[in-house]
Image 1 (cartoon, helix red, strand yellow):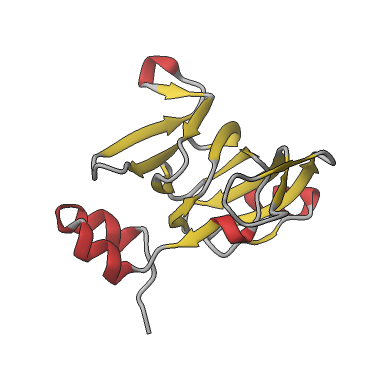
Image 2: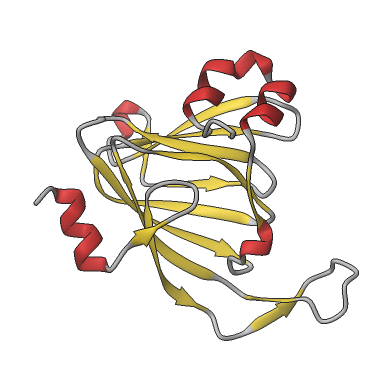
Length: 167
């Protein structure tokens, strides 16, 4: 059994729409009202998941309405690619070797387009993610390749790696 399969089984992880595997481990029971103009729209204060990305998969480009913090747990370092509101691309390495510009936690600001690739393709990365207010699929947008290529042609190669072909 590979190390990634060990974690998938031990943590009860299931497939995630963006790629990889996940399992929600915490959802704060307290809620907050959102200032969206829609009455009674609420979210839990925070939520947390385990997320495992095998080296032969990617976390496809997506966007969240709220901040997400990624915490390194095990496996290979991972690169998180972010495109901000101004179209600037940045790379953040999640891992434990600060001498190699790796950091044990990375904040993905709300509204950024982001995806990730495991640094060692034969390995995996196990992380924890916290979203505040808590994650809801209404706040998740998996981004289409065609749209991203139209908006950011300068990142074509990366967009092709971090999106799925459209049917």
